[in-house]
Picture 1 (tube, rainbow, N blue to C red):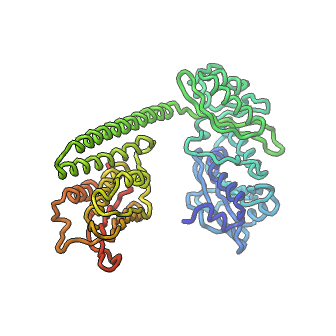
Picture 2 (picture 1 turned 180 degrees about the horizontal axis):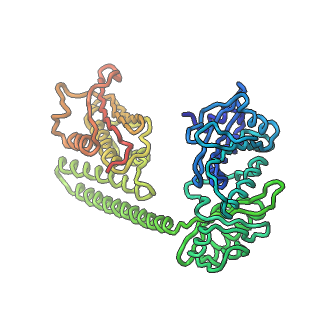
Picture 3 (picture 1 turned 90 degrees about the vertical axis):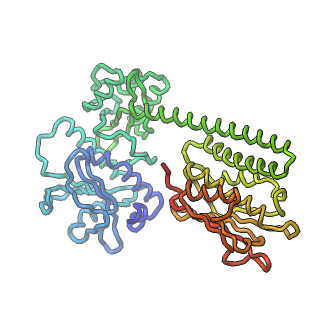
Length: 499
């Protein structure tokens, strides 16, 4: 299925600003569907003369009148007449007779979606007529607000210019307060009353100056001023950002929207949501995250201390083999420390492996100390990987680079080059370490090798990463007399979190 932007481009919305306006409407139209007790569908005209449905939403406050998925369907002929009239004349159009053809009788209203004076799409509002009962004051208030918002859509003043994240935005059922043009509450839903009770407000909301009342209920003066200013801004016709307000025993998320439909009484809509538990979990996660990062920082410091002690011990060793073994241990410990240093500065349990390797490669030191001079370069991107994958992967890669520098090039030969190649295919990762050296010894078997470095790599790749290791001559030799060697690490699912 194509994206909403691609579907809009296929229709009449071709300018980026028009596409963005329609996307903002779709991001915020659950509010309108819930207030109208109606299904909403967005339609754009095609060059063929038909109308194409590009998005759909169903109400959470009433039974749907459109149980089938309409996205991607087309309407033409007489059924499209209300769409054409609304688009051409730029006004809402209500069908004369209800539609009794489906499983649920419905009445449709078609609303033009205007942006910068241009109608870019139409919004179909389908109301289920099977629900017959006397509407309550709450339902009448919802419908009245929905009518104002529909007129604002038609006039191009809704949705707001800033795209809001709908995941945490208060919904109609969380709590609703309608304000008049002076900022006084003319209606408050039962859930809104309960939310303000938890904030510490004991009196009735109706008739009260909501901005002043909310400011007085805030435990934090600065937050109270911010919420009050947002409510006042909505009454004045602006779209403020949602804001938290914290009382003695509850935290509310407050969103205020202006209601300034042409020809209707001006006012504002205030939605409130009790987010006390959510904010408490957020604070707990922040505390846990800070603790984890501090642990990574301390582990890094301890590993650096261990590396320093091993380095001091290596300098005191008179036996070359013992000194070389300690220096290799220093390098391995330091590589792990770099991973923990990266995690200490990250808010996620993921590692930017490219950043780590850019720090580790210089730590391999002067490669002439372990073999002939060699140039090392990295090709491709490893990207971000889970910490459980990044640590053994970085260790395996540094071992292979060190092994290539130590064994690939003869001491009396010309300088060589080592290439580290990363290839990502979704979550899968293939790493290649290539050199243009003298190649593998005749009859060499990586699986039977008793070298410590290769043993470490095999263990890390097979046991820790669940991958495979292959060593062979490259498909294309780098040059005459220099067969080279290519080591391939195949790590399927490297990018998926590992438990």
